[in-house]
Image (tube, rainbow, N blue to C red; front, side, top):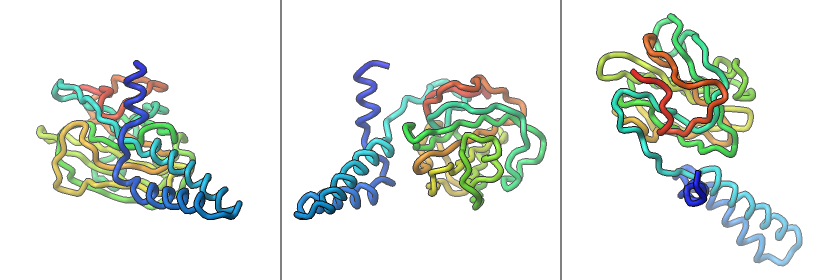
Length: 225
């Protein structure tokens, strides 16, 4: 990655979900520095540091989605922690026959905006309250707080994307609603402060990625349909 590309990634404008955090921390930084007491100046410095962290964490860079039709791209940045055959989430009514699940772990340093892996219609959205285990653990898929989406393609096949809260993450944001149509790579949500995103492929589709590989949301091809 070139220096210019790296700067564009770091300096990308923040996602709208950052606004309340930026306003609160920005106000705290200004007020803390203006007041004469030592403790308020320390709080102002801490608020300023948090403001900078939020700018970085909520960055929302533009992505170049592959022009090739019928490819599933990464729904999130991060690195793949597991690829295995499991049953789809029961709340999505996709049957219990094993399909490929690709789990991508997002650290606090990764871009946390979620993107649709392929063009289709959202036919189910299901939120499940749960625990906040380390998202890199395999059992996080079943035990952690999560938000699952079923996406139906034009040919009738279905795949799923699951947003999973992690050890630090405490808020899953999802703009997708049942009946909404999306194009490949479109933004649909965000998970705050460390998380995981699982992609469940149709039964007749095999992954093209490997455990440990780094994903770029909206760009990295994970499978061909």
